[in-house]
Every structure is written in structure tokens, then in C-alpha cells.
Length: 192
Image 1: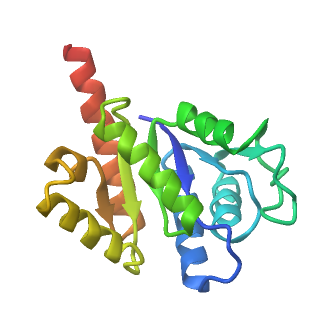
Image 2: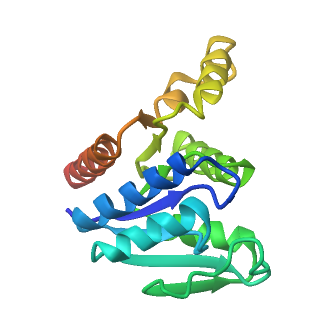
């Protein structure tokens, strides 16, 4: 079942190339499986690599860029099949969320972390049932997982909040989990 998958990831050009390679692998596999990709619409680093690879493999890409973001920061990817300009960052995230059937998160900085935590919080509060998978082959988010376990142990988080996100270390596995969760939620909605 084809999905529209929003990918949150790095736009930093200072990261190790291995992260950009994973993003490219993800874009190609996402397209091979017939999914549509939604990104923050930038050309640099992982954000650009995932979209270029998806298009090269015949996939459809949608970029969502805030009108106020200088091109020097991320550079709008005008090669996207659809480039959506939003008034600001908040509406950018809302548009990316609205279009998503599921979320796949690659390692990134504070912007990526904020995007992850926002969709994670919304899911744990039952504002949506869209699957969330963190693809982290190099354990960049290992300290975050440790922190979340600590917050759970201290009673700050509920078990359901911790379970709202899945983790994978391989591209194929990340997409398998995302697709499986999407099907499961769809089946539950049909039964309702």
C-alpha cells in the first residue's frame, strides 16, 4: 500500500558522509516501494540526498519550505515534483505533518529533534495514529533513548509514550516497520 512518508533529517553539511549515504539509500528504497517522499525541501546534506535518490529511482517528492528561510541555510530544492512555500516554520511543520501517512526520522540537529519530539508528543496524546520510526544505524540517538528510559523510570513518561516510536538500524527494516504499523492502524480503523 503506497504511503506518503515525511522524512525529518539533517541539512548540515558538517556531518559525516555515512549519514548522507543512509539518506540516499532510504530515498531509493522508498521510491522502489512506491511511496511519496515529503521533506523540508532543502538541497543540502541528508535532506537533499534523500530527495535526489528518490527521484532518481522514479519516486515522487514534495518539498515544504518556509518563505522566510534564506536560501543560504538549506537551499530550496526546485527539482521536487511539488514545492510548497509556507509563511513560516510552524506552518512548514504543520504542512509536512498533514501530508504524512507516517514519519521516518534520520539523525539530525535541534530542528530534526524538535520535529521528532513534536510528532512523538502528538501521537502519545492521541492527536494522531501515524507511525513514527527512527532510522539510526550509527546510534546518534542512543543518548535520547537512554533519556527516554530514564524519564519512564522516574514516572515522567507513560509506557504508551515510550512505545509510540519504533527504532531501526537498517533502511529496509525501518520501512518494513513503518508499512506494517500503517497497515495495522488502517485495519483497526476499518474495524471501528
